[in-house]
Image (cartoon, rainbow, N blue to C red; front, side, top):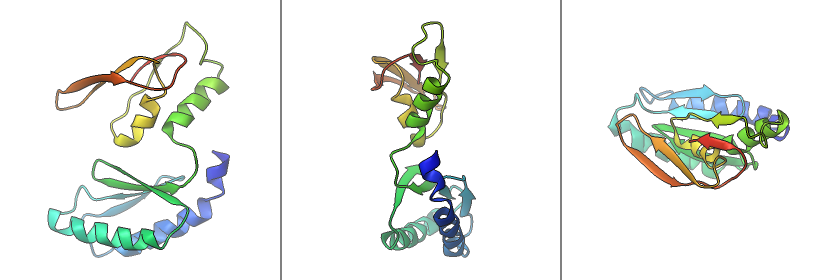
Length: 150
């Protein structure tokens, strides 16, 4: 996304700051996702998680222009722009001229809360989600155009 590209220098600085922030927290790591920076804490002991969150909160309160998201034992920081996985899926379908074709079935697979924006793009009606623990749910999803399974 071109707008997000403008934020690459700030994301690089943020990544460095986060690496310094977690250096003494065992099991915490920072991942550079190009247009976002993710702090992973799934390998941290539970006793270190409050310290990690307190440091993140303190650091982010001094930062502007970043949006905080969360997932399965991750905190994702990305530029505060109107762009997410749902926008990306819609853009790809439109750019490839697939969004209005009746002979195209779009399937999106995801395993985290950050994928929910993409799930909302599909089906004007119901979508089904299933989890690895055997649970599933059916719910209304927003969006339109094209078919899909979320």
